[in-house]
Amino acid sequence: MSTDPIHRELDRLAEGTAAQVIAWRRHLHQHPELSNREAGTALLIADHLRSLGLDEVRTGIAGHGVVGVLRGGAPGGRVMALRADTDALPVEDLCGEEFASRAVDADYPGGPFPVSHACGHDCHTAMLMGAATVLAGVRERLPGTVLFVFQPAEEGPPVTERGGALAMLDDGACADPVPTMTFGMHVTPYPKGYVGYRVGNQYGASTLVRIVVTGRQTHGSTPWQGVDPMPAVGAILTGIGQLYRQVSAFDPITVSIGHIEDVGRFNIVGQTVTLWGTVRCAVESDMAEVKGRLATLAEHSAAAYNASATVEFLQPVPPVHNSAAWVAAGLPTLRRVVGEERTVETGATLGYDDVSEFIARFGGLYVMLGVQDASLDAAGHPVPVPGGRGLVTNHNPHFYADDDTLVTGVRLHAHMAYDHLTGSVTG
Image (cartoon, rainbow, N blue to C red):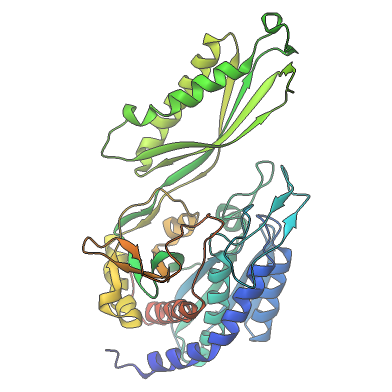
């Protein structure tokens, strides 16, 4: 139980933002924007931060990134960076809510695409906007500075563009002042109001892979006069399913091909086929080995069919690593906000989040916030609550998040920021 009266004040102010946070979240959900296209989202964020009278509101960082700077009125030199991601996904919205997205981006590379916040970034953005309101309300008692970092393109920009966390850092988003801690959270299919944490890699290492298999175009009636890239593609896809056996079974890896582009026709043997996918490693040191084996597989499989293959690895993202020291420091705050029984250790995941760039550079903590109709079974695994909406993973068209849980995220941001500035959470 906290003895600092400001913690109760933070909770009171957070409750006062609840309705507005829900309204922001629903607006963002209805108006999603893909990576590097978050112009309307950035405008909404910047307008709100300016309305709070922050010391600075910086816009146009790495595209549509926004950073708000709140300098506290009490003595102190620590700097907390609170981070939220703002972009949506090229996924149809089947969440079933009245505020479901009907947006379509007809101009996005590879599109047109339906667009939705199937990963919950609308929640992240709204919760951090609420936290800015709360902390601005106690600015005279803050012994340090808070950066509100709204990051675009977390899902990865088009491959011909730059964007995301590393681009924000390269553009000086956190250069003045430099954070002494980063904190953030991701909504997840877990019991509502529960916080999940993990010592070590909360998320895995990731890279995008592009494999271009090249043959020689010919008419479909005379395949012997050309080189068909399709059999080589089939061999590569089959071989990928065996890559996991070539690294330690105790370090999970996965290679998934999510999109295939062919430039042929039903009666044309095309010249090229392009495979787009992702490589994930629970242990970052395995990434070089997996990349090398994947490249060898693609090149040699193509050669076996007299074709060729080029393999490119793009947009690498390091794992989100929570050190034992930062977890130990942050646990009392997490438990104060949600209760000890709702603060639970989670397993590893091969998901990725480029918040890792902030955590690796400045230290800090990244946790999971449960937002679905679930409970934990005896083994600590989430299971659906009878009569509820079920468990739906992020990136699924049916993904949903409970509005009433958003205020918990606001409180987590506010409490963690204050506790770091006062020195009770340091790594």
